[in-house]
Image 1 (tube, rainbow, N blue to C red):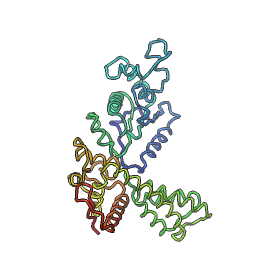
Image 2 (image 1 turned 90 degrees about the horizontal axis):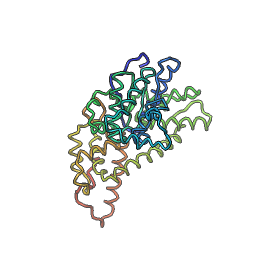
Image 3 (image 1 turned 45 degrees about the vertical axis):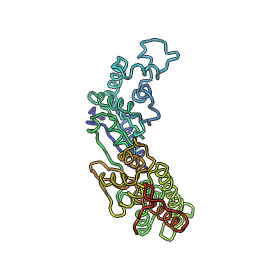
Image 4 (image 1 turned 30 degrees about the horizontal axis):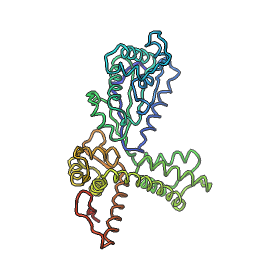
Length: 373
């Protein structure tokens, strides 16, 4: 882009929460700023869907020229100017206003390429999303412009609902868990920079316990840092991390329970338990298998308009499972969350079994499932 070339397509990044998507967006901004001294330095602009409720707000983030409102009014007074009302009259039309704005953006991007980053993109209104995608396509044809959309696993399905066929040509990046070496580096390097070492046995324990999940890696990193500073330790060993492990586990259990409660409130906990049972014996599964499981465990009071596929998409949106790019298989968002859900269900079954006078309801979509050993 710094050489004046336009990317071939937009960029879409998605994955479960806590995988580091926002961190990567910030990294992209930092990389773009490295060229600020150049005449054709790359400009960046970042937003979230709640900042893009109407066309005027979209253009406000895309255009660097703050005088564009006055220019569009051709010298008319701007007193009492309501951008929302003004653009509402022109957005759906092939109006001169939109053409002027588009040409202005193209002109700006030819001088300073623009990277526009939208986090939490799955929360965008479909109409505004389609408009933004169309702007990106039109600008990319003539000037260096890159649209980067980041969101949870539901983003992939959401983009199919806006009926923009060119989305399929986007560069899609799945943001998932790290590998073992990257996880170890994320723990060791920050500590080493401040003269703190961690022995190999302890490091292996931390790497395994984190499940290579960036959010859990952050919890462990913070706990180890606090422990080393509090006790003035230069080296961390297995004997000394029990306290840190307790802090991590407490935060993690709170994290698990919030997600389990959300699934329960949606009436999808029985389906989640059944799905977690499948993942006890496999790391991946197919959509057909998931559809069958959800059909057998759908909420009994679910509206007739809600299909099994909609329940599947809801479970995906809450990151219990996800479908990485370039594969038709699904995997656990966070494997340990599935274990937590199963453990809680076993506790529930045991409690019910210990109360002989309490009748256990027949299978109706909310039954106590056979969880196996």
